[in-house]
Length: 259
Image (cartoon, rainbow, N blue to C red; front, side):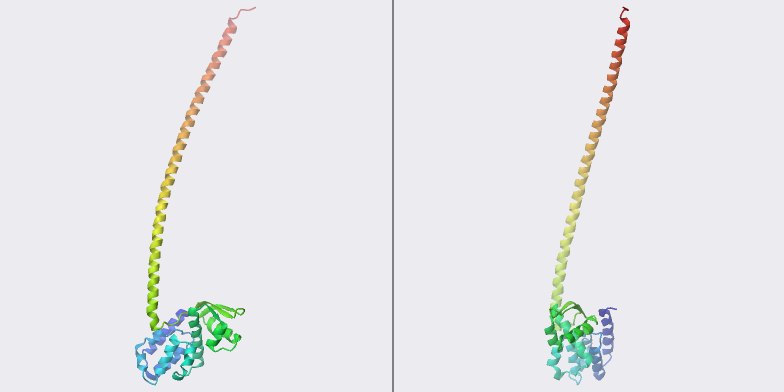
């Protein structure tokens, strides 16, 4: 099972449970969701209507924490830790994984120094262990560790939740892509029509050439047949003339007197 399918199944379970809980039970579910090792997207949970009941209560910080996991990073948590619940070790790991994904959204080459600063990692060995064991083995990123250049080359990174203000921009991007794709499709169709028409022209030209070649063959054959007939006639006439001359010679010899 790939990471997208696995995450979708886990996410639906949490969405279903969140729709039936409130208060302390709902806050506890949010802690469970942000700790789950297979879950890296949270916007669908955030869209559950009864989560709004946590606003203004003693559990509102749990909702703020869920928003942080959906859109923020480890650095964001450190900047707002005083107003947020303390994190479990699993949540710390998850938020650092999400931080790597956030960096990979904009850059495909991540310097080790930047990663160590963002993740609070003190040395290269610890950083590479984290990237291998917690990021690549989990399937959220694929890439190459370049120790010579001290960087991580990202080949694939799972997408994160879109912030509400990013949705409009994403819709416009998709609309532009759709328009470009439609123009490209029309261009390809025009080229196909042109190719088909040229193919028909080529077929007609080839047929004309083949017809001309066939006419030339017929003309040559007729000419050769005619020449063959003339040569036969000439040969027959020549034979008759030779026979006539031989008869004349024999008759003449018979008429000559004896000496």
